[in-house]
Image (cartoon, rainbow, N blue to C red; front, side, top):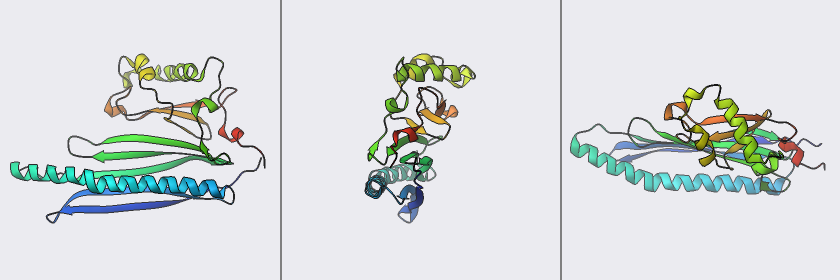
Length: 226
């Protein structure tokens, strides 16, 4: 099978936004720019996708989020409170880049005052030959159904440290499951849950590695030989 080498160039948008001479919001937005000798058209479209998403986030930060920061600043000034600087960070990690497959995730962190900020994770896995996102049910093809297999594997892993999770985690892993919340590594498929989905804030984003096997397909196998 032909293994295409995909290179990644990190692009960054960052700034400090001030009001009345005071810094109220700091942000950093990272996004990837991919390069490869093959799949030029698809890589161009994927790059456009991430560039557009970065600009959308920049616009949100510099308008809506900054307006929130100004409102908070004026309230704090009226009440004699210290200034709370808002923060926005959008960082990514490429977890798989081989043959025609790219898999990565983004963490969006926002701090708008209070005890701590919040992080939301987004992930995508791309098949560059088809120029389309890879769905989880194409990677996990067990006879009992991919969701049943996923939940069974997650339950086994949680059983090792159940104290990290809410007491009703058996119901929550089903109720809060998102079929788009996964990414690929070279060891297997990682299913993740957002903060507070199945565990307290201190437990963070919970991840569950499901190793490749007879019914968990390595995404490279979705690539046909050229």
